Length: 601
Image (cartoon, rainbow, N blue to C red; front, side):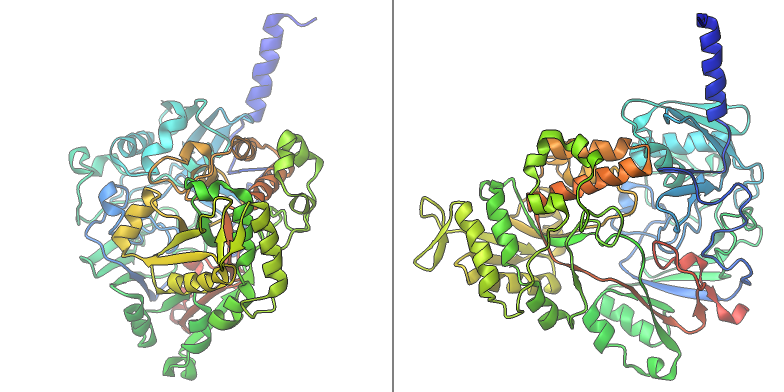
């Protein structure tokens, strides 16, 4: 029999083996790339740096600090940017866009983390430097987290919520010990989505005020010039410390990057047509088909580019506010879902460019579509299996396909069956409940495109005597009413990724259902949904995680909180022919920081 001391010694030895320094961390499983990898698989490692690119965005800015509350409405793009790249500031680790959720060393050369993820230790790269030549230190890391906790905006001010203790280890390491508010995603969010700022170059007292002072970061670019509200120009730092780091090889290829600001998208598109902007992301199938017939396209100076990413579809649709008594009836929500004629909308409004969305994680292995529930799902669900519709549980559920007429009798009959089940009937040409009260509600829209969708839905509903009003409001009113849940029905998008996590709490958890400003637009407050989100967050194996997400998907579909609309199967970008990209497209689609200017080659 082991003595207590011997058992303790064996336990410590095992822990030390598990907690060896590693080059990367993954949400589930192990990183795909070995410790001696030389570059990410979707970059061109031989690219020659040079040239320039001009991006365009709709908006304005009056501040170069993207981490404070005053920067939320007026964003200085490029400082800390998931799309154009973190040009000035960097995180401790760099995410690979060719894996579901994996981080590799950047400011932190290696990390130490136990299997239970009770702590993480970041060991800084001794080569890491700020743009002024000063060394990046452990004190900078601690300073950054504490400053953003005290004066940063969400989500930066919440990063330490799950941290019980933060301490400096030696001269070059920082160790964070987690509390019971943390989950298995917490270390990755801290590693890859938390900016590290220079302690020696920041005035704590004025940090939360707007400023156009040129910042100092550790990133590949410096701010060269600023024209408030109109333009920011970045120049590549030739002394960038990480230019040969494996996680940065093939990135940051332009000598100069400018971000141009426009008040309207039409103005931005016209500037692109004239060659003032080098790249334009297109999301409208109608424009993609009809509006790219200008001279630069005909001459080949601008090319149209499309890829099919291997990422989930997400969900875009009409959202029922279940805080309203009328929408607490699930069978009614189902009936209202069945009424929508996707085939008519797709043909009449969108050149048949869209695909009908049938799952929150469609196009991925996380989707429940076409897959029966496995034993793992059933074990987690328990008695909640009764809440999931049989065809959704079996993976055979599909929304009905109409004849595209807008009044398909077969589909309207299916919808009517659900209306009857919900306690409704048509009397005098109106859909009424058991008390004779007509079914009426209002759809709140934000712009002309949403209004077109709402008008189509209004027409479909009218065929069964349902009266839906439409109210299009200005941006400020839309923002205010969205944040306070002051609507009956709203049109919203729910992005999804291959690594869903805490975002699902904001969208669907009972803890956010009455929290103003949350993304729980449907007002979902179901303890079983909470359990399934918790199962996702605490899954250790890829198999357990996949089953948890599928179960979550089935539960949301069975709840009929959203009328699923459509998604694109492709990403569309038009760009100058001199702007080129690697042959391999990563899992998540286009990644602009690895593109380059052909004139430099």
